[in-house]
Length: 463
Image 1: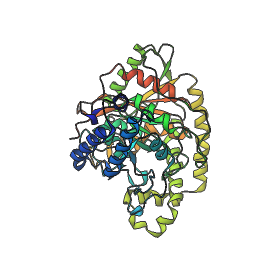
Image 2: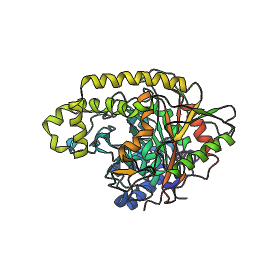
Image 3: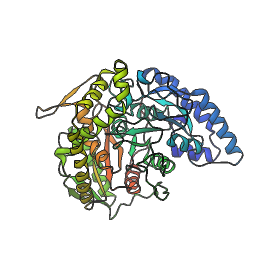
């Protein structure tokens, strides 16, 4: 196995045992990027020389006995909304052309302190405001969408051009591309991972989290990311937690909620079948399956857009008025729509979110986790704008993808996307696990137990 094919955990074990050097791993990942980037375009910026210097420094530190932990010497990609001092943060937009961060974001600083090696900044849908990342091709089929807005991060991990990556998630932007590219994506509980130094889309919905090849890897990264930072007003001061799960697969006594409403409605049959097979596997591991009703489903889309649109427009107010022509057309339309939204609609959306959080808390008393599809269909063709369901109903692609992921952003509950198979075309399918606030350890335990019963995750062909 070539070094770039290793999961984070496998690479960390090899580095710690002195069987693999950070330099060898980084060179392998950079060589892989040179091979597939012309087709996939996962990166906005590749910081090759910086990466080689950091890898050499990590190698020297480890040789001297100064091992920092499982991220030491591990190559990573950071979504191009996340500031790194001296590196461009363009947010995928001409509005930010030439911008370079003066200091590290909190998450970048924590990963750097853990010894991770920055390979580059990954492409995002402009300012994170979309679910396709049009610059980037799907790792399994370059003619399909990568998903967004953390599409570059998901493709980099799936194709082996980063051992792990960070994304941001406002309506599904970590989990959607993770599902479409066959990797793991974790949206933590709102307030668990600080967002200082991360370009916002919607302050009350934004989350930062890892994209990895395995659930174990996601837990390792989350352990380094979580923790209070007063520079993010939403950041919560909580005790430190080691999120890495035990190796067992016994889920006896754990209750898995299977939605009777919403999550399996208007879903591709292949997606539904794969997710239900995965749920059955959880039952085989000892979990008890319980049917649950998903509350307030008719308000999900209106609440998501009612919060996100005006908050995004508020952040972009000055540049929208001074340089509107620099925005891409799809993003500009959404930002202009935010200027027309009545304050009363925004306040009603905020009120709906409070009620939705209360109702979800009641539902999650019936189950320890809820298992459902991450997205209703696999990756559509690039440029496709709508999907027609079996009953003749037509739905916009963005609306379809956000439909199943948005509830976790509105309520702030943690959500983990785990790959559970492929459709007939060979495109990945994801299962979403949702839990109680700060219930990441339970989600990661369940996802890890499931993955331990499956073949090791394979890299995408990057074709």
